[in-house]
Image (cartoon, rainbow, N blue to C red; front, side, top):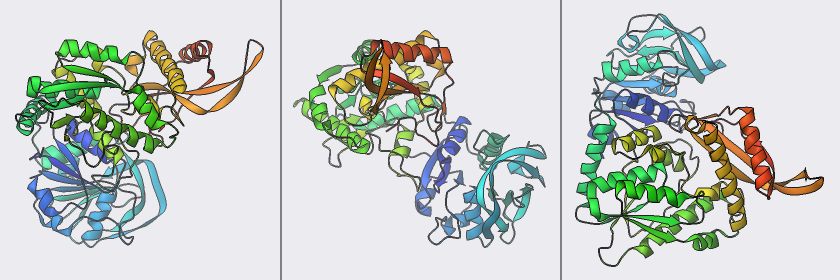
Length: 512
């Protein structure tokens, strides 16, 4: 779907690019991320109210460094450059960017030098977050400095027209005080973007879009019992009714009692569901495979094959609905810009290039918390919407190394214990995602005066808002103790439990 009267973020490779979009959407303004190399025609065709240039890891003076199309600067669209984005504007417009004598990563005090609509409502001094090793040494002709820091003489500036702005700091991060106000001043104040983006409008527009796209054809939907696939199924059902058939594939890689969640949703939402048992088939394909990317690709391809083979000859579906989210697309393949590919998502990087089914991904533009809000509007039970995210490849990517029936059985039981103990402690809803990982190492232990040599389990639990960044959950020690004790005492193949205290970044939430 193409949106108008919104904000476009041009991605120059920053890991904060998605956070910029997230902040703007929180204001009720739709925001879309595009790669920096999109042509001026493609950008203006979308009729954006404003354009933001993201940060990036490069230096603008390096050969081949990504730079905006100069024609973009000739348009009448307001532009805001953030960090590298500011430096790119300065470079293209004739200023000078140089290597800083001292890198600046962390908090700094911004001093506003003159009144400006970008800083309307801000105090003269504000705490901001810096992350740069280059700086603007000389502004382009006609530019005016509007703020500085102790080490950065041009921390914010604008051109002679008052339409193009640049800030060296990151207003999108929570460490920048009043950063959201700066973004609001630009998007709502300077760009006059309408604050009409809401999940209510998304639901109505998406239902209409699905009806137009599908027409009289039938749709098949992968239903796993997780939040994303559940919301997708109910949303598509609202659009096409009986033309939708949901398929639950038990691939042997699911959590304990997963089919119960699917049956519960099907009854509540009156969904037509077909149940397919295919564990042996998937495990056979995964035999001997240890590379996580290969695992994802095998599982993605096999899902499509199962669907295509299970489709009825009469009223054969033409569309496949999937619960792909915005972070899935961003982390899987760098489709929207030079941001690093983190991992392929089974819905994105794992699908075969030639499919008989056409894809419908109604949640592709949404972050996780937005998806949950859509689910609430659709009346999906809280028991479904409150579930922790579960990866499409399932337990296969939580088993480091080869996937076997015995290792799956071990991990499935351990995972159940982790979730059960967090629920009993009243912590489940406070945590974004919690799970266990089966490591490919064995550990020496002592149980009942006997030497043991068994598997090691890592527990992973994080807090987050949208999954793009995450912090490790500070689970009370007594709860961790109960989890570890119960695992070692009841799961015979495990004799050691460790806890992962890595945040995202630098780590990802999943291990593979």
